[in-house]
Image (tube, rainbow, N blue to C red; front, top):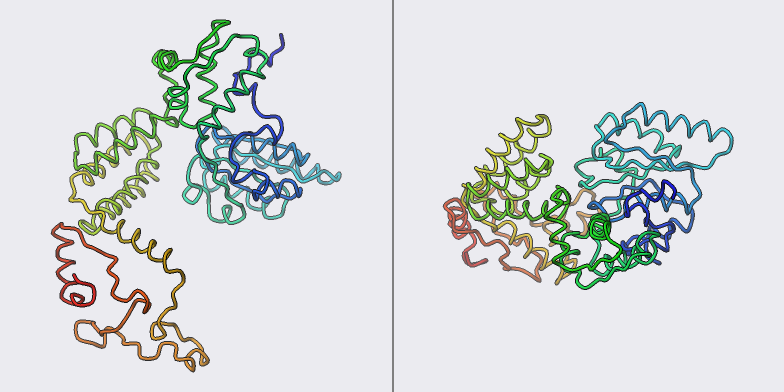
Length: 426
């Protein structure tokens, strides 16, 4: 028995070729953009953004294998600028002898600081390396703009139940250990629910169930029994992560500060990233409070900025202050409803022409075409109100914004009624 036998199941059944890769058809399916780039032998530097266990690392390895490129891998958890420079120097030296362009895979690239990410720029820009970065976090927030602009971003999705079933069946049929066992799949609902779209978690649970017996039945009860005995399976990247985050948001939305701070404490004690929590509150402040209390967005933004410069344990106090303020604030989703309604109108009506009087006229030709003609500069009129049409003619009079009933939004409605009662029916 060789050492490979002791690897975790998820590692033993890792796909060996692109044809074995399960899921992410939107980027590696037959006609998908990344698949075409791979088959053409030319890929740009890329960022693979998606939740854990969806195949980011595997895809990076398969890309390098398919292209027959030298493949280097670093983890942002335990690597730094020195490690990056060592890889780049090694690649440069190989290039002197006609070596092909190497691929550098950086797992959890969002954990690199700005200076660490900066150290990649020159090599990426000059084509010394092709970078493949993997992240579970939004690269718009976590990857510096200079590096992000040099990369294509591909979004990977949670595995569907059908894909999880395929992965499960392949593991049982092909793994050298499992195929010698008698494994019966009777139920999968609990297994797939606990997996949360994460193939690695799926295989970890399967391995726990079948490890100590040559015969095993996969049922909902056996899965939950294993989970209860192995609580570590519920980590901050799994199903419970999203359930607790959901409970936190819904408690704030329901204006319950006690439940809010409880779920916040659960996230903090579970090792949740402070920036993840702060980002959720930033979104919440606009989506669920909005103009009923504009200070909420200021508070949430300040919280987000603060936790980016202050570490644990002090960040928990800042998060608590902000969460309690948001939970205790009057609620309105009028801004959220308004932009949804606006986008729905755009989808239904298409690219309606901008009225001539509202168009920009920077050139004489545009002026000759009557761009900007008859526009009324609002501040030249009483109360900065010059009556004119601001919407395309086809949707004139369409009311998109409906203020809520809070004190502040009632004031907004009263003002809008005083100027737009006849046109929009406020």
